Image (cartoon, rainbow, N blue to C red; front, side, top):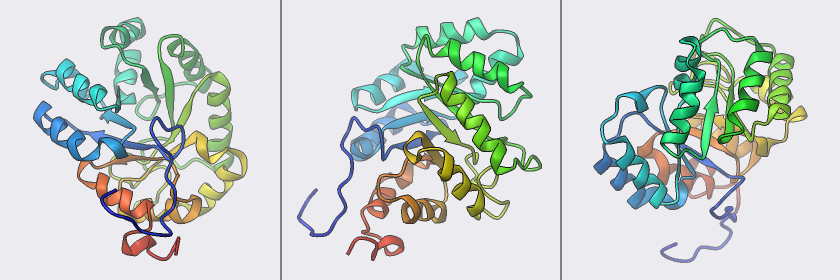
Length: 251
């Protein structure tokens, strides 16, 4: 920090297992990635190359190296896993993990219909190659799952070998955990937290109001995902109670 302030909550230090921030890269250039880590590396733990952008983005290896050198773990969005699976190319997906030396891999079923037992088998297989982060929830806003279903799926995926669960919201923040307006489904969140340890969940929260909600609910060291690259510093000040929305949390 650049100067001293009293009554600022203690944040977990990197390498973190809790208080994680996952940032969404929707197609940044290598130069933009360099600028991003220059200001945000201390506050970023993971960067997800969103959905299937890794398939077409230029200078992929160079960009992955920028993130790794800054101590930020890159991984590819779960939609890429789904794109391989629906084409019966799962073994090719595993080869991609190996080719790019990915330490983390996302397994999801937000865009395809995948029996949950089959998804769990994929988690078990991918876990032999990389640490698995699995996503729960649909990208289809017409598919509303009851809380007990979320909990059942989450427990099964943890048992299958998932390291952290992502609670789905898309990059728009208006499905899954949230109503179409972006409002948090508070009853759903409360029921999940009654059954699943909060440190096991990365809550996708692209909107400031959603970030503030989870910081109020769980604290500075809540795991948050789908953060816009331009919002990393802003989010960290919110975590520390140094922004109007959380200013009185820690005084």
